[in-house]
Image (cartoon, rainbow, N blue to C red; front, side):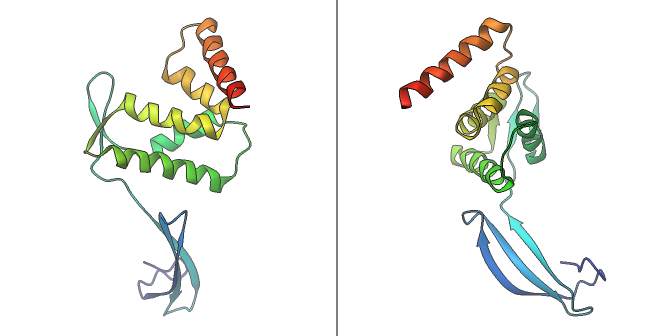
Amino acid sequence: MNCPVCNSNNTKVVDSRLSGEGFSIRRRRHCQKCKFRFSTIEEMEILDLIVIKRDGHRENYNRDKLIKGIVKSLEKRAYLEDDFQKLIREIERDLQKKGGNEITSKQLGEIVIKRLKSFDQVAYIRYASVYHSFKDVKTFQKELNRLLKQKNNKK
């Protein structure tokens, strides 16, 4: 790891701690050249996962694309960054539990919807409306009614 100040690659790890429910490691580093101290975070990365799109073409799993879609659904909603990172980790954990090296975009979308539903219901509705291609207001209302019914049954 290069030092962010002097760009030396002569850095030493002085402390490591688990973070993010054990799915990332925070490392405290010390530059041997300029003595600057800095931290890095090492996170799990999903490799070799292919997403099969609705039209049949395949593309590599892209974490940034996943985050972008979820952030869009959470636009102007209040949430903590730590909670958001936990949501992303849970989604990726669900992806890994599926096993294999391929997943359909439909399966991926269902995992996201399931997790968003308990994270933020407005974001869930927004994401579901795009994902399920709600055709009209009736379809939108039907999903809202189902969500409200589930919420009332939990009380």
